[in-house]
Length: 133
Image (cartoon, rainbow, N blue to C red; front, side, top):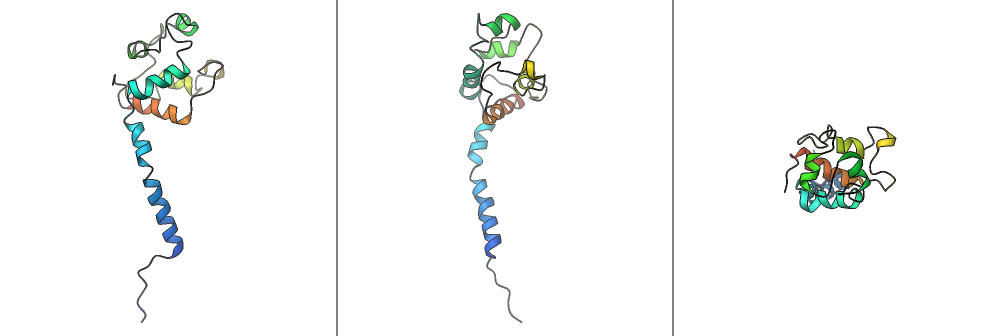
């Protein structure tokens, strides 16, 4: 009886190498796991939100929401908080950014949407407790 070869068939080898290559991408997703407010979250808010949601801006005057500091983010609006630490799905900031409140309330108004990566960073920061780090 002939002994079975210990080499992987080319198709399985290709699949194995593809899966291994995807594992090499982990540092990128790991950087989302370490999303800090000062290094990751605040730059996103500054880029997309602070034009309106800064002291004296139209969004700040309409809602009381100042997104230029951790304290402002955690204070929320005149209607209540926008962050539920540990729960990005229930956090109003994500509801508005993702358009789950309706197209007329989708943020940012009249501006380019946040990228998928920026949304992921915000979600991870919130889900990990929305710390001032």
